Length: 316
Length: 316
Image 1 (cartoon, rainbow over the protein chains, first blue to last red):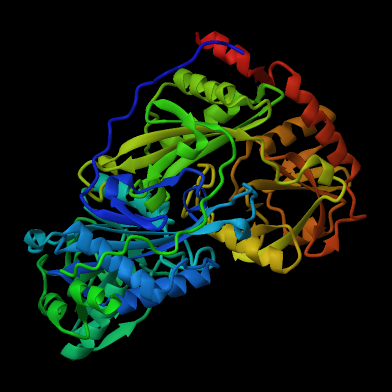
Image 2: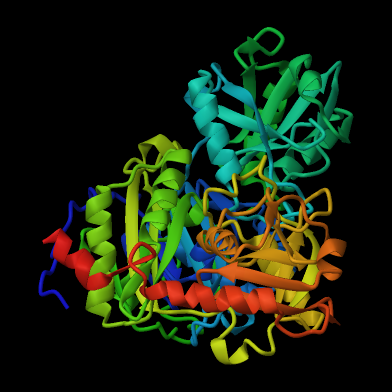
């Protein structure tokens, strides 16, 4: 064969990584060293599930609920968690402690992994656990809260439940990413996708709620059952706002008195425009404001949160 | 914070990698060193496209068609190929040459990459090219051809085109993987998924064809427009078999005289049972056999194939 050898071809710019600590292959490492094989089926088949819990002022928020969902997701798609729940908890806490972050975004992932024989059979793969703690990320920063989220309702259909179970938190996001590009072109900040019956579902990383005449509604199907979504439901109960999980049309959203989004990456966030039109007055409404306040208050209440230190102490 | 530090927790078994050569970050490397950041959106959002061309006895098969489709896929999902088509061609050939494989499975991938600011905006990401050459992989090995493929038709719906464009070769495979598990439990080797109208679509890595009374049909929508699918269509033309791209029902498949599957990973493959029932006689039929023979004959014909050596010579 030819002796010609190409040593280098226009390398891409070296990426920067957020400061953080990852755990994989049985050890902790700086974020920039956390890499998976390009042959991992978590990548080549998006055959993986994950969860994200956040740490705020040194305390995990609703850690048990995230662990419950993660373990359910792992089982539902026939993966096996390579460690016990207790070990996983320790690993997550130790990622945070080693990172030094007081406010952190803490992700846990199980991928199908790689088949040692490179067979095509997922049963042959060695499942892989990856955890990491990086700085807390926001879909909408607190200082942007007054302006609120500007959302474009996309005509792209969210991947339906009869194809991929949305209650298994998954990385099947191309529909959401294409929705984001469409939203940018329409002057919005993010997108909301509909199901094949025209009801709204979810956006990239968030659930959606409408408030009309004091009653709160949120889609009941075709969506991730977000922990922040559940928290908003719980807080509506505490504040005495009637709430219903039911199909929500794009028009119901447009005619709502208030609209808000929920995500681990930012909590409860006012949505102030839909497709360029203001939602009611175009400002965060009173129900949304009360929910936001209570949401952040819960962050240092035992029962809702637990300190990273305490988790580590219990693990010793 | 606690001084307790966890140095190691039950590491998973170290994976084995197929022998091969990868190209990424501007250089060539052994397959086991080809790793992407766990923060790459190609992984965290399955925001990537790819293509696979094969090399048989030192010759690429229909390389131009794979490059055409790959470049179209990259554009369709708003990625940018970080190198020119000519550079990509050289890189692929050099992966093969350096690997020493005479028969190879050659994959090219562009991922969205990582945002240098860790923003959530895909427009901020630095797109990443990954190429690799590993040993040729088979869905059905030649020595298994007489037994043929045993397929279970799943009730899981293939992710629909209005969610993710199937003509963009993508890694949204959880529906296919869940279909595989279901197939194993039903005693089959692989799965075939339907669309929401009940027509068959595709399986994990293959397209499907039926032959009835001399006429060949293959689904016209909701499927990857496979290069091996196109090759089978072209070869039907050459052999004078009438062919139609049209919706194909599961029943039409069950009542066919012959069924075959097509994939870069194995070429044209007889399907001998569907849901445990034999297709016609349960043996590879005459149309399938003629197509298989002609398919492999084309592998050393100029116009259909080009030697890796020649590609490298042209690139010097």
